Length: 400
Ligand code: ARG
Image 1 (tube, rainbow, N blue to C red):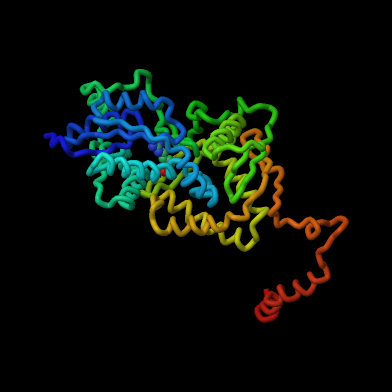
Image 2: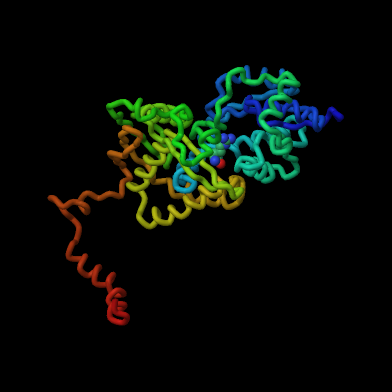
């Protein structure tokens, strides 16, 4: 029975699982529950969220606005690293978990809690990310995962909810499991579990489908300073606002829909659908800015670092020393990445159509085939003679 003093801080979304978890933590372990929600761009009504948690039995409910922090400390480095897991997934959900974990730990300290809790199942990546992030930041805190522990069917969960007067959504809940923040929206489950079935139009919320694409494309200009987008169409804005604005316009043109067969850290292959209009557009623009301002050898080496970064983020190692070292490397690379990039958004694509920079490494007098050519083509003969020497040696010694 309740030893009333023990406190747990629960990452609360307002959905059925974490609502039931409030009651379950009280009844099962006798915890006092602090419900913590972090707004990463998708919290519509913080007051209603808090009221719901308190009505279910939480002793306190807190909503933190994490948008600026998410943009500055998580999305900025991800953009520097053009981070895409398995070359496609921009890692929206994966990037949010360590930030939420950081706030869970801070709240645990504030409320004198001995544990934190989250609503992840036992089959996904998110449990790993929460548990490992908390272990990295506060190894003394216990982590409770009610949904992983209770292992109920949907029916059992509903029955528990009804028995405890926990509000169950009146309408049929979305047949999908959805997680969304500034960087993207992740959609799983339902008919998507059959990888042969095309994602129904109804699973998308942020991007227009082919039927709804405006006939006319739309051009945008993004300005980068030190690898960070600071202006959209010449207007300066806070990064979190810029990301929302880019997502809005790119989504209208259907940019950023992804349908992947993904490898989870826990060894399961899984069908994952994403819409990430802002992330896809911004990574495309950022790559264009880098191509103009960074030298060839750095671009090539950085591509390997990007791959490692995507894996450390995906695998829940955000607070580990490897990620810290990768971020230091990336920050160093971004100093000259200052450019304007023009993109055409049309028919599901964000296409780079122009780029310029005062720090450009592009030299028109070297590249031109027209007037004013300053490239020493005669020197190319000597360069090629020496460059090709090893090939001659191989041909002579080994033949073809
Ligand atoms: N597979 C993605 C990831 O591991 C998305 C997870 C989505 N989570 C969710 N609760 N729907 O990051």
